[in-house]
Figure 1 (cartoon, rainbow, N blue to C red):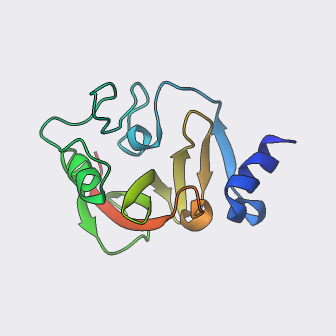
Figure 2 (cartoon, rainbow, N blue to C red):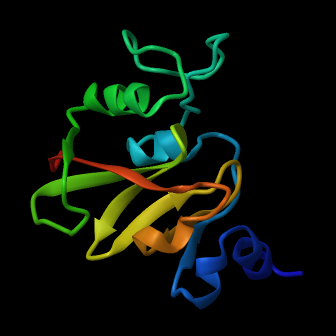
Length: 145
């Protein structure tokens, strides 16, 4: 079984996608941190405060808390997933009301994701919609930093 087979099993849309692996596995950071532009610490609102979570944001696994976490970095909700020059965009994926994943836009219908403790990949926005990550429930943007 190859890495491509494993990813296609978890994310069926990747089987017909032009995604590409962009970095090796590492447990140093997760998708939530990666979408925020960080690759040195794990972001998660765990109740024990083990992982990093922005100060002043409720430590709860809700779409609202994740929206507020990214707002601390200057992100605001927006309606368009399409690439716009001068804006950085992120997408939050959820199963029901539970956030499961976040990705950051890197070009026209190109997004970057960290898959848990696994690989980083470049993909299309809908490629990771699955039982595991759910669907895209929110797009946020901020001016390029």
